[in-house]
Length: 259
Image 1: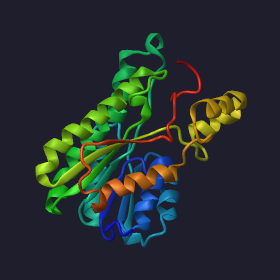
Image 2: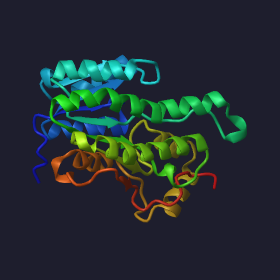
Image 3: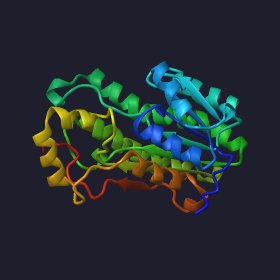
Image 4: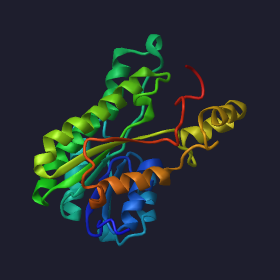
């Protein structure tokens, strides 16, 4: 199936590893010019080299999206280098602090900024570039934790807010011919990721988790998430707007422990 993405400019926040890098790689294979950002210079250099495109078709920007002005700088710099923005993936996410009684107001504020705040700022900065190109598409990478409770409620609450952003911004930006959707991945296993580390530290608990909460008896892969994101960004999904798509293999609980 031709997704009609050849020549499009696609930006991915946190595209230097994990799900973000898989998305960037998938978009690159579809013919997109790709911009990614990350905090570690060495990881970013390796990631851009791994996209396998001509140097003029890939740009990597060192940026910490939790710092004021950084995600805006990434979007504008990548747009200048690549010739605008057609597609945006707000992929960066994570959590700060422990449970309710072990977390601080600052932990909650940082978690919301890392997830929801960065997505808002990335989209706001990208929209004028998309308007100059006649429209575009956005995907926010959320999580099944937005709707399935697990420890560290600040993370799930921030992801639920991202799902709301997709539906609200779809209505607001639709007249500009800009679509906005969210994907909610389940637990994804990849080298160097959190679930790989957990499986090494707690092999019995990990095996129990897989057997208990996954009908397919395995975790997801980054490529399975990347394929859905790429489709949603494409013209083949032209009538999908404001949606939140679960990519979780019918997973039950999001956490191996608790609840």
